[in-house]
Length: 602
Image (tube, rainbow, N blue to C red; front, side, top):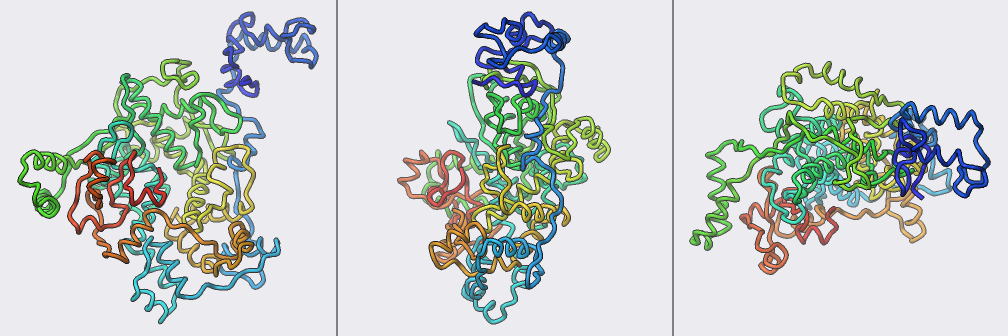
């Protein structure tokens, strides 16, 4: 039974037979008809619970006749008190004996001792140096780097060195790109190449190398096209707001455009709030923090977006020289074939960045009944979810703030609603920045330890999720991130400097199972697909550390190219082919086999 009466949204939606109220007419409303039936009638409501009083029936009738007005979506107190939507404050540091200088150790040690677990000692230096290199840079240390650390085992100095390296930015850019569904192709049936997508990837790497505040990166990614150019420089402005997600091509232009906006919204909510709200396309769900109406209201913020390919190639002479050099090295024999040469020229010349622009005309947004595009429901306008405690969901407040903070925006093509959404997501005082920070911190912790402080990534999508045992530590780290200007480097420095990070591994099956939950021993961490390939390449043939530029096409057997990629895989020169995996061309539907085999995220 889909019928729920706990909100106006659910009343309007109704059950399988449709809405149970007809605003303005109680006589035509199923709800009113049922409550006025005789008590012995099989269809009388409430079922087997007596009859409402005449006063109660009259009040409901008057409300329906008056238009059945009310809040668009009124979350229940139970929903607002859910762990994932409740406001949180800085927790007190647990006392430990002996006292600890790193707050992470305070929280972890106190809980482990409370549960009766013995803390393991520090792992040998040779293991620690490997762990630091792999977790912070995604690459194993060389023999010389290991020997250097063993000679002078200064952990703090090594951590600082690694945090300021190019390899660090590339390793953590992979996490960001995965969260935002980055790919070099459109996905779906054509899976055509987005040949300018790498501009976005490069900007993410540069931003992390310069330790841009994470909330600033989120803001610019969502609405970089609307923020005045003085906050950017040239290509950075264009690259900072590329939206990931597949393109959907259909026989209906309206559906194609709508699906793109739908993907943009879902990815924005998922990457920042951790919520998979795709179920709300079709119906309201008691576990979801977002109602169906609110789902379509959020799409409204993206309704006037269009993606343009701009020809902004810089340093044309240098690019042309490099292009011809790569061409000669990669295709010495095929260059004699005019047809092949024409195809390759066309590919290289189409390297263009993507730009998000706001159109003056925009598609109207309607609720789609049962999620079917052709089944239009009511027309909706942009609104923010009113379920996060301590946050301000009044859209007018955020529009006013947007104009106050960026007054020049009036002179540029913009979408004020999208800027309001971006500010709401990144503001930790009035918006949901504290919730965004918590989801991000959990992702970072999972990248280090193989599992998050939240019980499961799925927890963020369910109002029934119970608070995890490490909720105090997660809340403390989230507020630490905000206090330190959303610095990922400072967060990683704190984690890598902790005793928890440097612990010896579990030695038995029983201690291994316990270590997974309580962190009193080091639990073995599965390396990401990129880390596995990069490690093999570095140790084997050697890794080329050239940063940035067009995506590479790593080596692929002739068989795989013909059968798997339908001869749609280009070869770079050997030098380019052996770069880090973050620079490898990523097909959305067909991942590079050497990465797909090791669990590259889809």
